[in-house]
Length: 216
Ligand SMILES: [Fe+2]
Image (tube, rainbow, N blue to C red):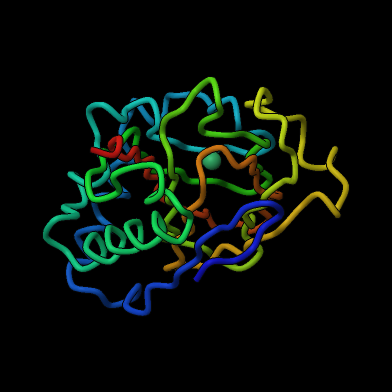
């Protein structure tokens, strides 16, 4: 579903088989294994994370590709996510400027946020930094009191990283609730953040950056 968010749209889908899709155990095991790697546990928080601890595999994106590790080509979750990314590319209008049938993963990684953590405002692309085009976020584990995703009304594309979310008034914020099994696809240039994660349990998501080929 395409939701209007300020001057743009954001696509939100819920995977109805998120708790019982074929291959779920293997997917969960592979994600937990990632967060137990010494090179993840020993890495400091990414600069966008503030407050509590945030584990991320972003720095391992070249060697630990999420679609490969989770076997996207051969499981129901991967198939569902890929179809929704394709659908979102049309809903967000990328089909008018790019060949959306041919796309490449840019960085792909997993994030795990612990109590007190929040993601500071950031963009994944801008006019000067044209790729990726689309970002897909799939939430694998979202307990109650989890941080939600917040889009921010700020068209200054030169600003790749904003101040804290609280520095923006409520009227400049649009909340998309995070939820286990939810996929959010947005234009990589949209400024976004999260509010604070307040659960004792971690919140986990996958981030998939996608770039589309030029039109033939
Ligand atoms: Fe992001």
